[in-house]
Amino acid sequence: MLLMAQTTKGTGKEDREALDRLLIEIAAGSREALAELYHRTRTAVYGITLSYVKNAHDAQDLTQDAFVRIWEKAPQYRPQGSPMAWILAVARNLALMALRQRERQADLSEEEWDAIPAEGPALSPEERELLQTALAALEEQERRIVVLHAVTGLKHREIAQLLELPLATVLSKYHRALKKLKVRLEGDDAR
Image (cartoon, rainbow, N blue to C red; front, top):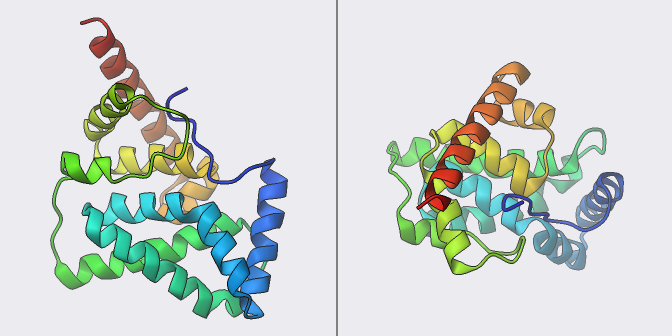
């Protein structure tokens, strides 16, 4: 489906093991591991920062800052849970700090949605525009949950931990968002 995009290749267990290995290598000072981690996770990191700061330029800056912070904090990483959740928590915390510093929020412009990397499935410009319009119609938290699940492949339980929400809330918002997207997309197709 349109929302199915993967940031890494392989199975979930292989992905976790690869990300764990990369974080351990980064902790040991490997710049090559950092480059590979960046390549594998940059879309997800950009997506979460954009969902918070709602500004493409700021999200790009925060994405870079997140990888600098990952470089600095990698020695503190412990391979226990999801490495992707740890990476996204670093990015989320930077985004929240940026929001506190500027104390304002704005809606995403069409230009900023266009800045989201189109690495996932091959979407035509028309499909991409339709998807962006449909996502923009969602409430902020619903959009964040859908993007985290679809783009990063995080499980609902991991999203709940990352966003500090009850699992039931994440599940209900996700399903409500999917219904809204379905109505929106079918309505647009019917024209």
